[in-house]
Length: 370
Image (cartoon, rainbow, N blue to C red):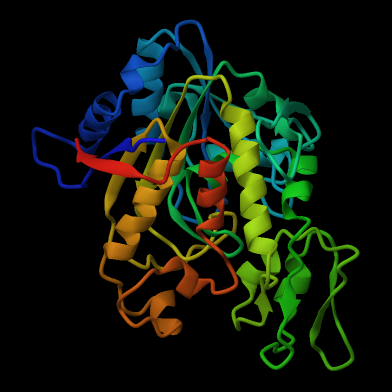
């Protein structure tokens, strides 16, 4: 496959050019205005933000995207699927309230919110996976599965299981129903470093599967017969005692995510926007976000989610690290790739490699400033 075009803008503004106007220009330069969206139900896949985590994409950015969809005759709606772990987005009732608290109202965004997989995460359709090796079908929330077009709006950041999270992660994992998420996560079996464990029991309190207990020495023990592999324990542990399982878990999970993304996008008009801002080291799914590892870089857009994610990885790796962050904690040398350094048990390139192999896109790109 030849190179794909990835467009980007920096965050500099002036009195005549706001960041929202620059975003609109980016979308049009990158070709979103050429999509056939007339009368199409258009899913705007976004993460509404776990209350307490401030890294989520702000609603005014969404309003720019939804306005362009309506201009093209489309019927936009904001959507996300329920989470596998405990939190404020575990069911549609709490999920919608969390979204409203973070400002995702009809007035602010220009479209309504629909939780993709229903009240308890059980409303899904099985879509065929083309060229997959891990699954023949993907269990995708009905609102996304039935949409005529898909646009992903993605906060680009680190991730404790896949290394980083961007377009592929937001789509493949984010649109999966509860049953789909269990399939994606089942290869992950977090482990506890007993020497590092302090017995604080934060992981016990935050485990939705009730799979973690403290033993007689007040060390965390994970029952892998109950564990769903969501890795919430990894995110909440302040002492690096809980770690994503070593070996192939990260690679297999990332490959499965790529296959789910292929199923979602196959045969549909689609477009993808990555916000490389507040590049926190961990997933946005927790009720807190750590300091960004690099300064805000900009907003990137492409019709190719693989090239888009690759370009954003490269941009983060090229950016100077910020001292006093997780990179400092992990004794980052100041050069080299950052996501594998932050999460050494992950294989951040696996999803990109597999997505390119199944024909979802290409890792080769031309970067164009809009």
